[in-house]
Image (cartoon, rainbow, N blue to C red; front, top):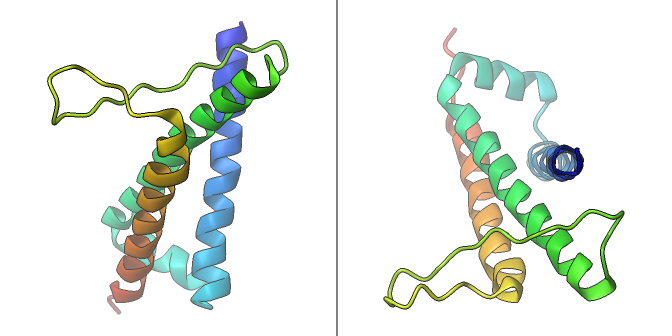
Length: 129
């Protein structure tokens, strides 16, 4: 039950954050109309890959953030969060990427690149009339 609650909490935070960041980029920065974005995305189904990848990346980020906060401040909400383990491929020692490096470097850069890619893809997609 705790695993389901933990996954639900992380998923909810990731979905809200993904919607907020995509909405901020598309509607506040690019000043696109929501109906135009919806129309472009329904015409070209491959544009859905960017929000899905951003959601997956934010899920991993939120999970690792909760793991970091539970280590630093004790167990949060009686849920034991554990980090998602990534290793370096260049060495043969199976060395894990430090949690701080993932939270401050890897996840924000990847999310920023995916947001940039989604903005370019949505702007370049033309509705076929």
